[in-house]
Amino acid sequence: MSSGQVYRCPICGAEVTVIRAGSGRLTPRCCNTGMILKEKPSRVFHCPTCGAQVTVIKEGKGNLEPRCCNAKMALVELQQN
Image (cartoon, rainbow, N blue to C red):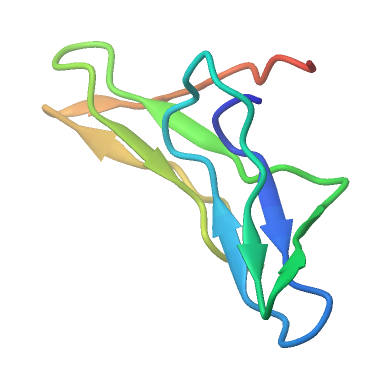
Protein backbone atom coordinates (compact mmCIF):
# COMPACT_ATOMS: atom_id res chain seq x y z
CA MET A 1 0.00 0.00 0.00
CA SER A 2 1.26 3.50 -0.78
CA SER A 3 0.05 7.08 -0.70
CA GLY A 4 -2.07 7.99 -3.70
CA GLN A 5 -3.59 4.56 -4.28
CA VAL A 6 -7.31 4.78 -5.13
CA TYR A 7 -9.89 2.10 -4.39
CA ARG A 8 -13.35 2.06 -6.04
CA CYS A 9 -16.56 0.31 -4.98
CA PRO A 10 -17.87 -1.83 -7.87
CA ILE A 11 -21.45 -1.42 -6.60
CA CYS A 12 -21.97 2.30 -5.87
CA GLY A 13 -18.82 3.86 -7.36
CA ALA A 14 -17.52 5.37 -4.09
CA GLU A 15 -13.77 5.98 -4.08
CA VAL A 16 -11.19 6.29 -1.32
CA THR A 17 -7.60 7.51 -1.62
CA VAL A 18 -4.74 6.38 0.63
CA ILE A 19 -3.36 9.53 2.28
CA ARG A 20 -0.71 7.95 4.50
CA ALA A 21 0.27 4.32 4.09
CA GLY A 22 0.92 2.23 7.17
CA SER A 23 2.55 -1.15 7.66
CA GLY A 24 -0.73 -3.08 7.75
CA ARG A 25 -2.67 -4.52 4.85
CA LEU A 26 -5.54 -2.27 3.73
CA THR A 27 -8.66 -4.10 2.56
CA PRO A 28 -11.35 -1.42 2.10
CA ARG A 29 -14.98 -2.55 1.88
CA CYS A 30 -18.12 -0.76 0.72
CA CYS A 31 -21.65 -2.07 0.01
CA ASN A 32 -20.60 -5.28 1.80
CA THR A 33 -17.98 -6.09 -0.88
CA GLY A 34 -14.26 -5.53 -1.40
CA MET A 35 -13.22 -2.33 -3.17
CA ILE A 36 -11.11 -2.58 -6.33
CA LEU A 37 -7.68 -0.94 -6.62
CA LYS A 38 -7.69 1.46 -9.57
CA GLU A 39 -4.78 1.22 -11.99
CA LYS A 40 -3.93 4.94 -11.93
CA PRO A 41 -3.05 6.39 -8.49
CA SER A 42 -3.77 9.99 -7.48
CA ARG A 43 -0.87 12.42 -7.69
CA VAL A 44 0.58 13.49 -4.33
CA PHE A 45 2.55 16.73 -3.82
CA HIS A 46 4.88 17.51 -0.87
CA CYS A 47 5.95 20.91 0.53
CA PRO A 48 9.75 21.05 0.83
CA THR A 49 9.51 23.62 3.65
CA CYS A 50 6.89 22.34 6.12
CA GLY A 51 6.21 18.78 4.90
CA ALA A 52 2.52 19.32 4.07
CA GLN A 53 1.08 16.95 1.45
CA VAL A 54 -1.88 17.29 -0.90
CA THR A 55 -3.56 14.66 -3.06
CA VAL A 56 -5.20 15.41 -6.40
CA ILE A 57 -8.83 14.25 -6.17
CA LYS A 58 -9.86 15.12 -9.74
CA GLU A 59 -7.53 16.06 -12.58
CA GLY A 60 -8.40 19.16 -14.59
CA LYS A 61 -7.27 20.23 -18.04
CA GLY A 62 -4.89 22.89 -16.68
CA ASN A 63 -1.33 22.65 -15.40
CA LEU A 64 -1.69 22.12 -11.63
CA GLU A 65 1.26 23.53 -9.67
CA PRO A 66 0.36 23.61 -5.96
CA ARG A 67 2.31 25.97 -3.71
CA CYS A 68 2.85 26.01 0.05
CA CYS A 69 5.09 28.20 2.23
CA ASN A 70 5.64 30.35 -0.88
CA ALA A 71 7.38 27.40 -2.60
CA LYS A 72 6.37 25.05 -5.42
CA MET A 73 5.31 21.68 -4.02
CA ALA A 74 7.20 18.65 -5.35
CA LEU A 75 5.48 15.66 -6.95
CA VAL A 76 5.98 12.58 -4.76
CA GLU A 77 7.20 9.48 -6.59
CA LEU A 78 4.73 6.75 -5.72
CA GLN A 79 6.15 3.36 -4.78
CA GLN A 80 4.67 0.23 -6.34
CA ASN A 81 4.06 -2.54 -3.80
